[in-house]
Amino acid sequence: MSSPSLEAVDRHDDRHTTITFAPGDPSNPRNFPSWRKWLIVSAITLVDLSVSWAASGFSPATEDFEKDFNVSAEVGVLGLSLYVLGLAFGPMTLAPLSEYYGRTVMYVVPYGIFLLFLLGTALVRNLGGFLVLRILSGLFSSVTIANFGGTIADLWPRDQVGPAMSLFLWAAVCGSPTGYFLLSFVAGKRPWRHVFWALLGICSGFWLIMTVTLVGFGNETRHSVLLRRRAARLRKERNDSGLEVPDEMKQRSLAQLFRVTLSRPFRFLATEAIVLFASLYNGYLYGLSFLFNGAFNLVFGSEGYGFETIGVGLCFIGFILGVSLGPVVNMWQERRYQRSIRNASNTSSTASLVPGDAATAEEDHFRNMPEARLQLGKIAGVLFPISLFWFAWTSVPSYNIHWMVPILATALFGFSFYTLILMSYLYVEDSYMIFSASALAGVGLVRNLAGAGFPLFGTQMFENEGYNWAGTILACLALLLAPIPYVLERYGVRLRARSPYARQHMDDVDGKDDED
Image 1 (spheres, helix red, strand yellow):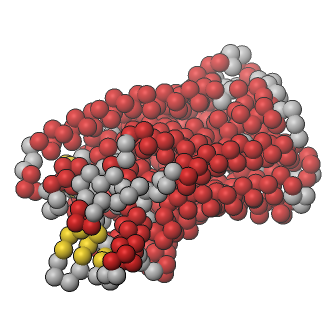
Image 2 (cartoon, helix red, strand yellow):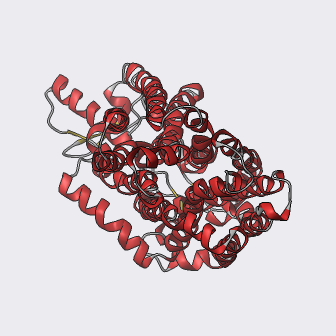
Image 3 (cartoon, helix red, strand yellow):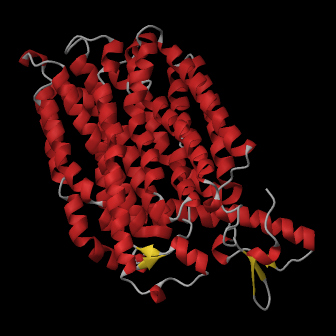
């Protein structure tokens, strides 16, 4: 696609010419037609689903894996935990590299390498090699965790990211139960290696779709990379070394990028109460989602209701339906949020807007109201422990309660799970704006560390404490987290006022790119 004329995209000063996107510039990803934006998001959403499938899809095959390698259940569960551990640390390496190479490269290449590790996992003949391949698979498959949020911010202004973020987080949340559900049909009839052959076929197909969408149609979205490429091309064409991009989009050294990427998320976790609250909720929710892989096998498997592998997989349908209800109900939350910021913005003086051209002011500036994201989260915070109590006291087969009753509890859990994840993700995004990549990296680190750790004790907990009391312990912990949305609603403004990162966005804000 040809770029507009130089005059249409430059601002001049005495020494340099700054390359920017002009209003209406078709090469600006935010000006892509809607169908093109949603094509990009849909292609990456498929990959996002497969990232979780590669984690939980191993769970229904764990028993056969343990027999093949003659190892205990504690060792067998490492096939899940090490992969999720890779997901925790992969984004800290992959995310900053998009500053250099763009998002397209950082989707296509690492995920392609992941496919090679997936092939190795299907072929490996020793336990040590298998475990190493699992953690490497997690590292390289974490491309969507590292980049998807940034891609959405590339395509839409900050106040319009809700629908796309809703779809992204649906895939992230629904991936675990759908992975178990789908791959149980393979694990129930075939040896465990066939699960990885099936994953390789599915993931390769998704990788091909993503590659054609991003590479074949030239759908790079990172603004700084696009403008640097334009500046380099124009410098060469016009022999003008004075052409530059805005200061915030100039390329930083790898040392600078990794220093921020590796240190700031930990700083946020240590000093920012909002990030800490979001991390606690995200970590507990994701930990439970992977813990349920083992718990479901106990509750509904041969030691519980007596279902075989495929039957246990089918029991995840309740969880899946509950998660899938979340984006539908969230349409109400999104409309309420849009109405709130529109009403607040109408009462603000346009003179308070961050300086910029008229088009930028119209598109990117809005009254920042993270608390307008919390209404459904407050409801879900109450439903979450209720669903766990419900599951705990109806999942014991000796009580002669129909198996459908605990499955209905998991549907309620799935809805509250999705709603709380979406609430916390968008609340942190709105609170920290240009620093949100670092804030969310801290949240994501805790989330995936918990996802890796919970399966290590989940099965033993349900076996030793009994299904009802194990579930009750989990429900009581969830009850302790229930006040968080109410605390954020009441004290969020005060917490942001005390934060050197968040307080600059407490009034009207713009939609600058993250520093990921």
